[in-house]
Structure formats: structure tokens, C-alpha cells
Image 1: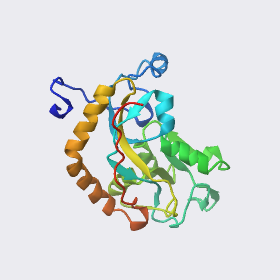
Image 2: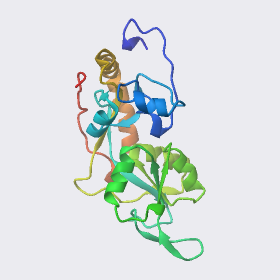
Image 3: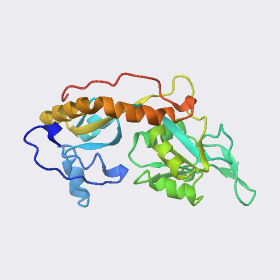
Image 4: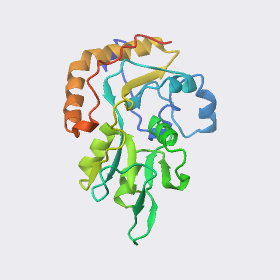
Length: 236
């Protein structure tokens, strides 16, 4: 951790479900939420696959670091389903009957907001929200859901663990939203945010190479376009 500055002598990594990551940040706006959720620990930085969003900055009182990767949302489905399958479609179940495809996504994520925004007329019973997006993989394996909606970089990891899956062509149209990954701190802790940015800059070449390799393993239609990472130099 020396990249964060000479005053940093130790640190503690905290594993949290997807839905709790931003609430855990030590911000003024989160103080009341944490009083209602005493089981959620307090953290200073969120580092894992966090999508940049202006709405999140306002809601949680956070500031994002410079971005370190680009991604887009996608739909992971079993290989036996049609390639153009999308949320709201009807599929044939094991009994031969027809029902709406069941889609799993993480609670309190930009993916959940995006999915609800794009599928306002879909039966709510067909949308499964879980506190940790990784739980969707087990539900898909158990055939309790038919698809997982998340970032394609996350879904690539799921595909490696569940070979009988593929990415549908959903959300690959021209003009589809491209997202950025960044880290987050309190918007009152500008010194820490600048230290995080310095650490990101020091490791950017190595990090970029890792993400580039992962992206190139995706089908071409799901690869986000090349884009220079956005630089964020301080708190709002």
C-alpha cells in the first residue's frame, strides 16, 4: 500500500455483497443509512468493479476516482436458448409450457436500474434481485433463473465457471451505453481520493493490459470500444 502515501502503514480488506458496497462508505449521507443497518461495516474506499454514475455521487455523497476500465452491460444465457434472447421474452420451460424468461441481477446496481428502465412492462415476478451479483451464477446453474444481467466483464468470469452459457446479442446495438469502472471514496476525503488516483496512475499500464486481455476474450459484438480512461483529479 505504499503507493497511497508514506502515512499509510496498514489496511484492512473488507468483503461485502454488491448491494452494500456504497452504503458502507464513510460519508455524511450514509451515516443515517448505517444506523438503520448496523451489520454493514464502514470502509474508506470501494475498489471492486464499481460503475461510475452521477446519481450515485449525489445519493451516497461519494466521489469517483479516475476510471481504470470500460465495460457494457450484457445478458448471460444458457447455450440452448436463442442468441437474440432478451428480458421479457417468452421461453419454453422443462414441462413444455411457455413463460417469461427469469432474469437475475444485483440489487442497488446500475445494472438493476438499467434493466428496470428498459423493461417497464415485464412481469416483476420474472426479475430476480440478489444482494450479491455472484449469487446469480448459482441460481442460473440450478435453473432457478434463465439469465443474468450484469457487466460483460463480470459475465465473462461467470462464463468461465459455467461453460454451458453464452452472451446473448441483447444490448449490442450501436449507441448502447458504455460504462466506466472506478474506485470511490467520500466526497469529503479529497486527500484520499488523490492518493487513490496516484496509485491508479502508477499501475495503469499493468492494469490496462489485464483488462485488455479479458476484453479481447469476449465476442467482438460485446467488446466495449477503445476509450481513454476519464481523469478525475479531486472531489466535486
